[in-house]
Length: 147
Image 1: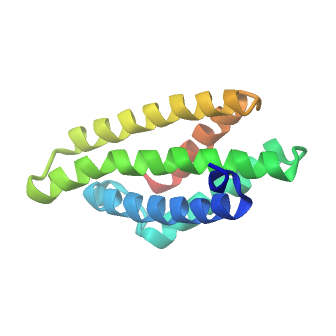
Image 2: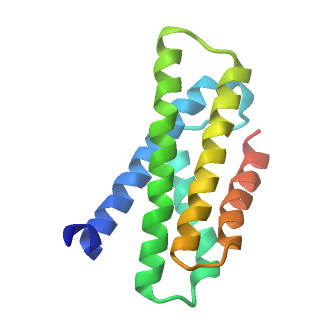
């Protein structure tokens, strides 16, 4: 259990979560690519995830380095959870092409689950609840530009 609380473990986990999220969302974007204005690939999503970290930094800048690390660690674990929840949809679409409606409904259901989990973890970390809403705000801002 001591390993799970080390700084190095958390940093490595954060990197893995960022890479997995970028890869998975780029795969999902291929399902709805015809609805997007941008060429959505893993590099684009990598930029979006990094941008999210920077976007949320002003809301936690006055916290200690360990609180910041713990927040990013938990936030990115939630992103990893969302990525893993998207894989059943990706696998189904490999064999059978689902409609845009199904793909989007499934995606937003995953986002809702992620939001609930994000709020739970923010409360557990004793951070202000509005931080969960900044995560959603960032993604909505990005959505405006890619749709």
